Amino acid sequence: MASVETSNRDLSELARVAQIACKLLFQECYKANIRDIFLTETYRSQERQNYLYAQGRTRPGQIVTWTKSSNHKARLAWDIAVAPPKPLYDVETLSKVGAIAKKLNITWGGTWTNNMDRPHFEVKSDWVMPKGYQLEGEVVVPTSSNERVQLIQEEGLTLSQYEELKSEIEALKNELSAKASLRSNNAVAPPHKEDYEWAKESGLTDGSYPAGALTRQQLFTVLKRYHDTFIQNNGTVSESHKEAWETLLQLGITDGSNPRALATREQVGTMINRVIDLE
Ligand SMILES: [Zn+2]
Image (cartoon, rainbow, N blue to C red; front, side):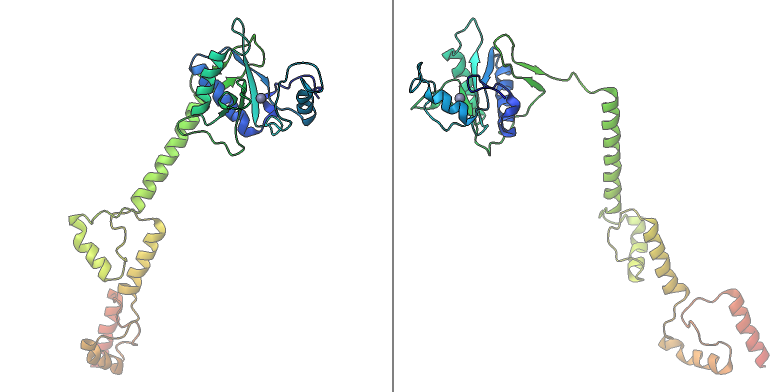
């Protein structure tokens, strides 16, 4: 644990949101060619804040802070400085960083009218990355004046990453096209129009997704409906055949089952034979 006399420069001691904001700030500085800045302090314990507050008040030295309650304590603030040969708190550099911070919704202490604090940056706990920005690689945030800000970007995908991505895309493509063809609501093509109407009237289909693909299970349902409608229809005898049917029943030509089902040749043969036997 750091003593109250030394500053903590560990970025990972900040809240996650502040870590991201700080990295984004350093990244954007890097891209703006400001690479000679470094972190001087991140998280500050209450004990250290009290210690700093005492400086210039109850302890000798220059006043360095105006508050006992800082956002460093809340893990939402960080301080930076500028590497030699520039002055440690080079106003021109810090102002440029401040201007970048403003675009990123990061508060710069340099804008404070009371107790201006140019090396200081902070975010609210609900800070979010502004639209159009992202961390574009590994951002190296220096913690000493002899390091430089760096943005390490991967050159490209490794072969296995590429293969993995390719197969993922392929799978998605297949899934999409499967969905698209199953649920195609395109109009019925002219050569199928009559059949489509017939199938709808016969109750084989409800007519939805006319140009969609048929799954095996849907085919089974259509076949079953066809069977129940045309092959083994147990419905009642239609009016125009009622009299003839009654006669056949009385004469014992048929047992009266499945009146609206199709008859096989052998069944027809049996019925003809029964007629012959009558005479
Ligand atoms: Zn500060």
